[in-house]
Length: 132
Picture 1 (cartoon, helix red, strand yellow):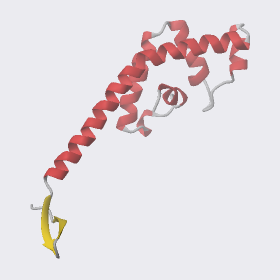
Picture 2 (cartoon, rainbow, N blue to C red):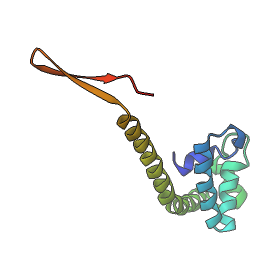
Picture 3 (cartoon, helix red, strand yellow):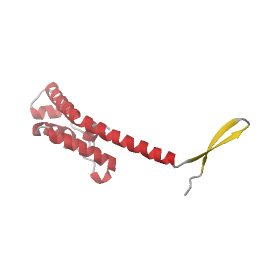
């Protein structure tokens, strides 16, 4: 997932989130805290102060007294700054999760017993039931 997914789902109730979503959201919150208050307010207006659907850039640009182009450029710059903050953190977390899956798979594989049989000059390997 990317930071943008979490911006769009910012309003999701925390009790409906998985543990993974909660970890990812912590990274987003960390990134948002690094932004200037004014910049955070722009993202709040776009993604959080909604009824489940982000406000249009055209409507928000009018509220800020900016042209559509000025507003989208400003918001794009803020989102790029947020991305620069959170991308390395998401990568680190994704690497950690990947390594956990690999380690678990390795442990499961190591606990398997394999048997090799020669039948008609060909070797057949089969998985034996796990010992308890």
